Each structure stands twice: as C-alpha cells, then as structure tokens.
Length: 85
Image 1: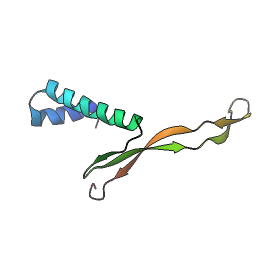
Image 2: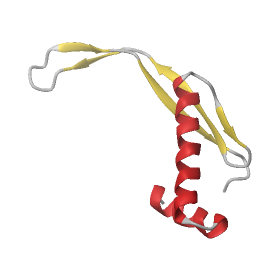
Image 3: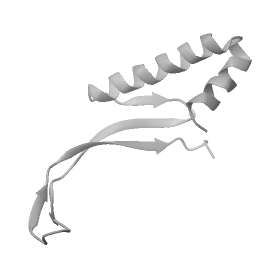
Image 4: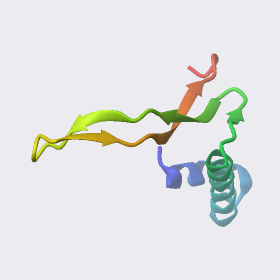
C-alpha cells in the first residue's frame, strides 16, 4: 500500500479525495517532525516509531579496498503492537 492507496481508503470514510489527501499528508508531516525532534511516535493498536543512533563502523571502499569509517547515523525503528497481526 502506498500513499495514494491510503488516500483512497481514507476518502471513502471522509468524503473527498482532497480532504483525505490533506489529512494523510498532515499525519505524515506530524510524524516526520516529531521523529526529527527525537520524539517517539506511538499509534495505539498499530505500533511505535522511534529514532536510534547507529554506531560508526569500519568498512572498505569497494573500488580501492581502502579501509574507511562509516559515520554514526540516525535510523527509525518500528515496533509492532502485539495485536497488529
């Protein structure tokens, strides 16, 4: 399911596709902003999203074979709610 499918599903409940698209976009924007600020996003009965820091780690340049360090990065993790499936 992609965003367009989600908008179509929501439009069946709300009425118009324009209103549904605005609502879905607003939800995703709110989630994005909360995660960028380092907050946890919890959707009851669905799951939770939170930001974790991935450690820096050694790797190799595939062209030269030279060792390089991959810098630490932020990643989003999702934990599914127990009753989701």
